[in-house]
Amino acid sequence: MGLIIRSSSIHAAGCYATKPIRKGARVAEYDGPRLTKRQADRLYKESPVTYLFGIGDGSVVIDGHSMAMFINHSCDPNCETEEIRGRVWIRAIRNIAAGEEITYDYCLYDGGDDDATCNCGAVQCRGTMYSPQESKKRKRAPRQAREKKAFAAPRGEQTAR
Image (cartoon, rainbow, N blue to C red; front, side, top):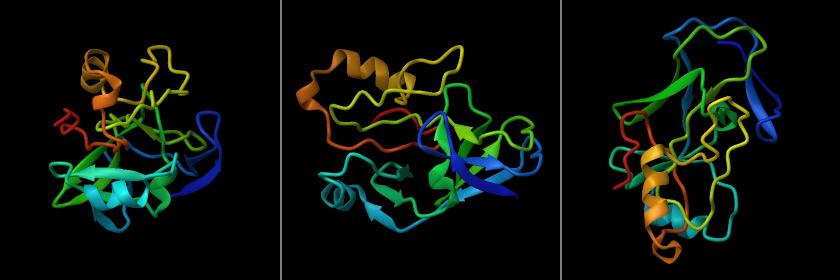
């Protein structure tokens, strides 16, 4: 798979296809050290930016240290995530042209006071990187009750705990 990191209009740096990618192809693996949610919360307590990805029930996170950490969020993505036996794969949900930025819907959950504003520019942008379910929950819940960090969730596991 041909990928390159370069400047992105969505957020700082992004991951781009250097060759066409077929629908259904695995584009990248979201990899890095595994931490408990508690360890990650302590480690990144003061950090405004993290590359954490929740796996399983969300009690373990991947601390992203791979090409996939540069894949930006979009409300109209060309990829989705898929967890298989504790590994997270980014898979194309449509054909992707060479030069196109690789994106997936982060479906954030477990967030702090941050609104996680979305900058994807999609026609149907929901304005946040939080999942639709988490967005509804956050509108109902008082800000003080929210946890500190936000984690991305694999497709199908985006419902907040």
